[in-house]
Amino acid sequence: MSQPPSSLPPDEESDLWLFGYGSLIWKPPPHYVWGAAYRIPAPHVPAVQTYLDIREINGYSIQYTSFTPAADAATTTLLHHPGPIEKCMVYIGLPENPQFLGAQPAADVAAVIARSKGPSGENVEYLFMLERALRELGDAAGDEHVEDLARRVREIKGRDHGGGDDGLGDGGGGRGG
Image 1 (cartoon, one colour):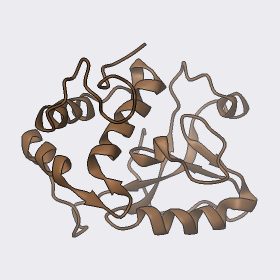
Image 2 (cartoon, one colour; image 1 turned 60 degrees about the horizontal axis):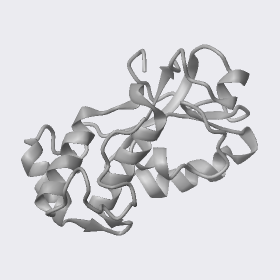
Image 3 (cartoon, one colour; image 1 turned 90 degrees about the horizontal axis):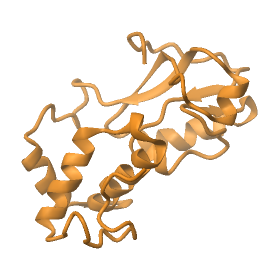
Image 4 (cartoon, one colour; image 1 turned 90 degrees about the vertical axis):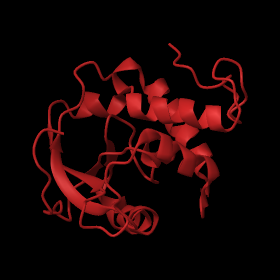
């Protein structure tokens, strides 16, 4: 993202561009067109916004920003939309939100993830799915913080990084190619 987010919504007759991170990478919203950002066709925007508000709004604020796809991103969507996307919706955890904790030591975060479960399942599963999805997007999508947390959680859970079973069938989640 290249400029500070704003709260200006897209015009109601246009497609909606949605920047996805976290579960929006591995569990995308309905009616999207895959790419570095999701393009929601205009007829589906109201339904998708309602769906996302239910799914993402607790802990996040909706903002709009410009988004510039990676130069080497090879997706069908980008072939139809080269260059920056001027209004891209993003859910951001802001410090004003009561759910926002701020920076925490990685060891403490890993310990909470290892023992926590929410309405959508175990936090461990969420972390490992995010790690896998980022790996599948390619080296440029790597997130050292996510990788570090996944390694720490595997250690807490007694899983061997190189050969343990993280429940996702990828032998422990080391970066692949």
